[in-house]
Image 1 (cartoon, rainbow, N blue to C red):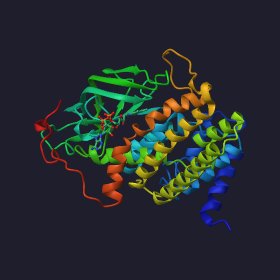
Image 2 (cartoon, protein in one colour):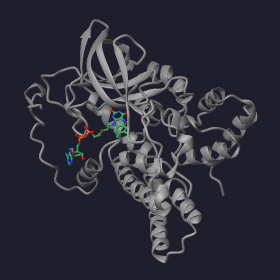
Image 3 (cartoon, rainbow, N blue to C red):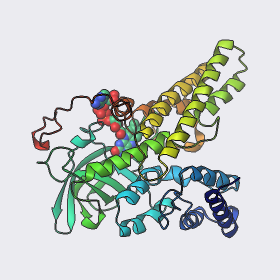
Length: 393
Ligand SMILES: Cc1cc2nc3c(=O)[nH]c(=O)nc-3n(C[C@H](O)[C@H](O)[C@H](O)COP(=O)(O)OP(=O)(O)OC[C@H]3O[C@@H](n4cnc5c(N)ncnc54)[C@H](O)[C@@H]3O)c2cc1C
């Protein structure tokens, strides 16, 4: 029998579909109505696109909306905002920041990007060098970020900058939301192995951020960054997907198309299918555990497992395709990724990044070792040293 929460969710989905039939409603308008009914991030508090319910209900909502022909593409189009930024705002934002940013984020009227990595700071994010200096009610930002996904179309960027270089590296950081269309912000595309330009370099030259766009306290940037990263790992590796979907669906398709009847390959396909299913169920458990508030280190297990498996499955799929698997359009055109034409070849090439983006697999293992298994931490010799005194290459 359905519990009261499930019944409430079901009746709100009915209301949304009745008042905004997907076939006659534009996507932005539909997503706005979805937000207003609390069906955007069901685990958020009421008034911020949620109903204060367990995360598991979101899978039901998304499934029902898809079955009714409604688009859930916003979750992909604005993956950084919806997957990570929203959690940051709900956990650390002020009332006016939540009211200002959450709704247009969900409707994709405003796309978000994440300005964390720098040429000299990736895994060691706390070592970053981009500076923000206070000037009255504003902060002046100078520095460079890199690998910034979606920066080319973003309105807002989640920026971590160093505000106190004399403090130890984790303590001198502050978190801001910067206007990507403002003066002093330059976005340059980077080409990747798939031939697309999915991410960018971003340069700041005296770019200004109002203090009202600061998230949490001055010096609390590391804490806010951790919230972002935990949400990122769930967003990347911890999506509740239907059984047999994603990369493994491509492998099954390639197997059927190949007409092969090799028992060794069939065994391998079945092994990968079983692993994909185990990974999917583990993710569901992690999503349940993170039912309210900030996800914990469980997000790292999902992210690590998904990255390894995705690489293995896409590689196996190319093997099934034989020589055809080696064919890929040449040349580098400056174009954003085309998710519609996800060929097995593109999926294989793109999956190489899975063990880097959102934190490398080695870093995931460090987190799992230290925070899940309770093993001794790796030596951190610069932890208590002022950032200005840490040697940099
Ligand atoms: C497709 C893609 C999209 C991205 N999008 C964004 C984005 O939108 N915004 C953003 O800010 N960043 C983004 N990134 C950057 C990403 O977060 C970094 O690439 C990642 O954190 C690794 O940092 P790095 O590249 O500087 O590698 P490094 O940190 O220099 O690491 C190099 C190697 O050393 C290993 N290593 C480093 N430290 C340790 C350690 N302590 N223990 C064990 N091994 C270690 C790493 O695992 C890796 O193999 C993206 C990356 C990719 C590939």
